[in-house]
Length: 553
Image 1 (tube, rainbow, N blue to C red):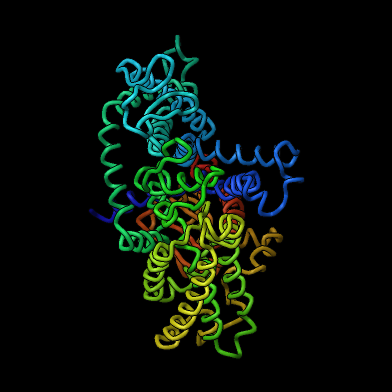
Image 2 (tube, rainbow, N blue to C red):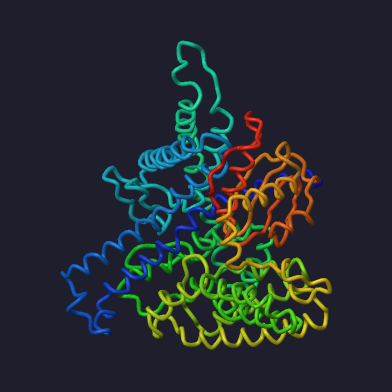
């Protein structure tokens, strides 16, 4: 595959990963609602904390917590629809609202078509019930429609189809007699018609695919510590490319991550199984077969990487430590509290890829260690203190074995500290504060100064100006987006990127794949993206040089 083809492929995957991030990003909040609601409506939890008078059946707080639990369950239960809408939002070039609307309608139409075909076949009876003897988990209810269990795959494919149709037809012109249906109105129409065909295709091929996925899922789940180790390594190794969401979502949300019956209903995917058990008051212990794909990041996010940050600080020349202390403390607290690791990961990724490679291997061992010790603490998105408190401490040691996880965090803190301190000195890695030409003005990770700088409009414009110059000017910018820590751009000519200039704007690294580039800025990127987009549009010729895209990743 040539550079041009690989660049285009990376560009598509980058947009897919960015699209996935929107539904993923709501999971922490919804998961917290579900975790709190399920925990404090569980009779055994209420009794253990002696809260019967406050939280017992019939109390106002009990009803309120039941609402939180119900909201969490219904959101997690409808993730396929959310993925369909998010993919359409992320991949539509213009008029995104219409694309999202069409995706929602198409998702419903697709399942309605499947329902009719299943009914005609006799698998689904006229009253909506399922024929006895049907393989468990192959049929489900989607928005009240009895249909095939497509999981998030169904939503993703529906979103892909609608985004393609939208980008092709949203400007279509029709003969005068039917011109009312031209342009944007044509998109939902062609999408619905196409969804009928898509439903028929799924009806014919999905049972075979479903069997294959279930078989592959059995291999993944039964592969033991080796499979868990590889999962952890691959998930971290994809971080530099921004494609880790594409890798783990199928395991979290589909049969690739296993299956389990909870409270009389079959659930597929590691995270779906975990949250089903979380909502079930009869759960005595969480399934390690599912949670092993969720828990493994806690040891290095809350222990290992803060230990690495301390090691980096201790490797800084003594006369420079005061200038960089806040940088490393900020990075350590960010990963410990929220599980956002990219600020510190990219610091050593771009200065010493070998250090990042060691980090990848250690991440794999963390996943395997959690499985070996039967630690079952779940997560919504990223394994920081907030998730640990709700899905570990609050659930109790009997269900989660969380005290061993605390021990493991401390072990990984020591391992990372000792190993990184030794290797930074041995390889003379020029981390911030160890450079020969160190200047306090240029020392940069992600500190409060980044947030303060946003208050000054002149500084914002100056930075946006430098970024624009660094990516080849307004004529070279086609598309602007962001994820949690990266400014994602599609350029007309990727060779015009000036990495040296971009790094003077606070960018800790530049990833280039053809005309798709990612600029690493850390958690401030959502604000920076809006500032940069406004600045670019103010300089735009006004004829569509830049697609005005919403933030979806």
